[in-house]
Amino acid sequence: MKRLVLVVLLIISVFVVSTGLTAAQDGHIVERIRDRGELICGVNSVLPGFGTQNDAGEFEGFDVDICRAVAAAILGDANAIAFRPLAAAERPTALASGEIDMLSRNTTWTLSRDTEWGATFGPTTFYDGQGIMVKIDFGVTSLNELAEESITMCATAGTTTELNITDVSDAYDADWELNTFPDFDAIMDAYEAGACDAFTSDVSSLVSRKATSADPGAHLILPEVISKEPLGPVSPQNDANFADIIRWVVWGLLTAEEFGIHSMNVMDMTDVETAGIARLLGSGDSVAGDYLGINDEFMVDVISQVGNYGEIFDRNLGPDTIFGLQRGVNDLWTRGGLMYAAPFR
Image: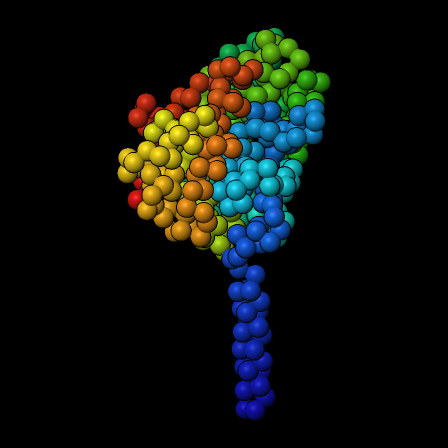
């Protein structure tokens, strides 16, 4: 009986100690960012338009700017940031281990990731869908035609892309061999060399790769979109405050565009007494930042240094870039899109 009691007490002690260690590791991401003096953000480094490095070695792209916006909100400096290039398969480990503070790397919000990754997904920043790209001289123009061919289909390893294309292959009873690669560069090398008859990924990724290929006119993105891919930033599930900051920074970017506030006029707008604008910019008696434990004027720093959502989209992906993307479903709800922010109230 005494031995049984000792065993039970030992089990309870181990549980208490392990729980205490876990609790000590939970939360406090914002404090660590401040102590460190920079935000660590996991990004893509090989997807032009979303995450890549320019000739000077600087990171740029749509997802990169979301990281910069969060850094500006917490530290007042959009450049107080360290980027960690990650392959798709590395994302959950980097997030869970604390190697990165947040992830902004064309990551689809799914049930399994929301639960198994121990992650909190922020608002969707880019609504996408999966497509398929082929070379024009392959001679197919639709998914139905492609399903009749015996081909090698290539995709990125560790992504929802693998699962989605397998579902489609099964549905069409297609004779496709699926080959996976660690990143987009490896896929494009294989595709250009003829080792892949078709390449499947998010449509935005296909547009990026087509536009930056040696001969964009040699490729065709098939018209069918085979999945829903809501992409957005991700943070560890153990820090609700940090997740709230990411959430309200994204919604602030959208609200700023809705109010017509942008990087060139934001300083003038701080004197506007309109209630909604004052709450967004932390003017007057607004305590928007106080709710989050950051500067009340955090969105002034974000907008002045990074811009509003529309500026970020147009700068990296819009009609005046080589990608030439229209806003479509990524437009504001007031213009028929899906981008809708909760109110700053």
